Amino acid sequence: MEHRNIHPVSDYIEKFKDFQSKELSSNQNEKNRFPKFHNSLTPLVLWNFFLIEYEIVNKRKFVISYESKAFVFTVMYYFLQSSKFYNSPLFYPVPNCEISLKKGLLIVGGVGVGKTSIMKTIVSLISKCSLNHDQQPVRMHNTVDIVEEFESCTNSSRIDVSRKYSKSFRVFDDVKNEREASNYGKVDLFKDILYKRCENQNFRTVILCNYESEFNGDMYQAIEGFARYGHRNYDRLFQAFNFIELKGKSNRK
Image (cartoon, rainbow, N blue to C red; front, top):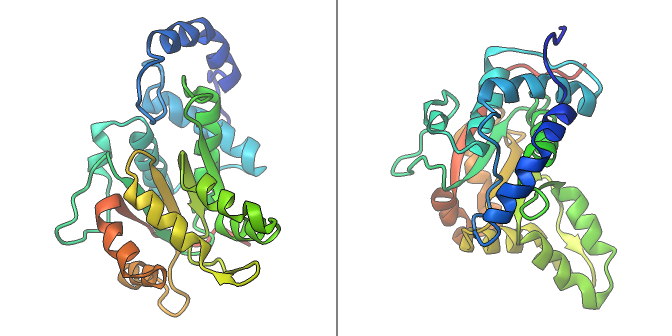
């Protein structure tokens, strides 16, 4: 796919560099922890940037299907805080669970459908296009890596790991696939992180996870799998997250 007449992201940043500086200066006292974008960054512009950035980040072209494009636009509308987010066909209906732009995202899908590669690309775009990225960055982590970081800590600095990942806007990938951390005893590290993040709604959270291995394609069982983090965390999921299901075939060869 050729991307004709599309300016690279770097051109966008250069064009609005002065504007960004002025706008941030005028809004420096705001406590909004969500990314901010210039009005010129429309969904169509962001989609064009996404196609380019995807190839840069993942070293391959984006495979467009109904599901994958719907997922990209769902996440884009979320970060743009657009009301079109509510029209996404990917929401998983949960009784008495309100869809809201003020909640985080809990995204479930099969292995290889593109959850991680798409989210990596969008996080990369945010780092380049957000007007307040330096003040309110969006960071993405794999929970397996967080456990390894915790295990490599000295006894006195272990609490710092939990505290760090309990703050700021963060995307957590491969959730439920991490093992218990072992560092002078066993601890379910993400259980503590998830509890703190659900308690503090000032910091938005995006979770990516697969279906349960024995219940492939079963969204209900995927959500039930969060019971491993305790009943308090499980109950808070429905207050803290919108549930999104990404179906489709695996793109892995």
